[in-house]
Image: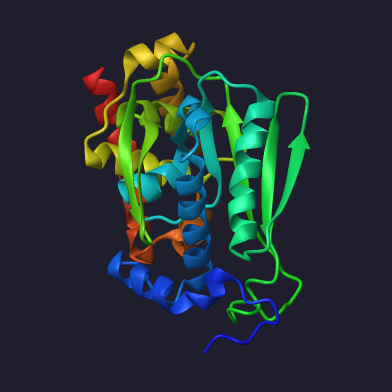
Length: 272
């Protein structure tokens, strides 16, 4: 039973239906925080790509794999390749999505964060987790980060359908082969290795993705596979990886797939 809120928003009002939809998607109902986040992500993507200029954004990263390809791993941030629009225009697009949330009485706070290289957005949803009895702290917010990059070029673009929680829309994204290259880049160049990158690489390969040599070379990563193999030989798989990854998996037992990473890299290398 959801606690009553003085300011009942549409999401809280529809919470039972959202949970039923999640069950139909094969999501574990006990992971309610992840469920809330994924609903908001799906709604954000739906509303974003209802705007014309969003055609200049390609939805990538782990959340794109989750929402568009149904990878059995929850993800947190929304990442995009910027195909040629200004940061100000992206801010306008995100601002329009926020207006939709507000019109539906979903409290939503948008802030722009800037550093030397780029700007990104943080969207906070207050007065949501406590009324849904997910948090005992009434001041705790759920936050979604929205990030875009102009660093990649010559993508192989395609559309994939968003079909979640009653939302249906074709969404622009990169090919699986492109996403594999981008995930390998994340694995190689992050200061701290994230097991989610390893899991995603294994899943992508198992799904049929292969290393896009032309895409890698076009972006200055001709030696990316070699660097990935060298890093794996040096670092291996840390014992902490499984514990860090398991809470984000639909089936926590799937952490065992990390153990195939070395073989996946070997096979990718042989296929180039």
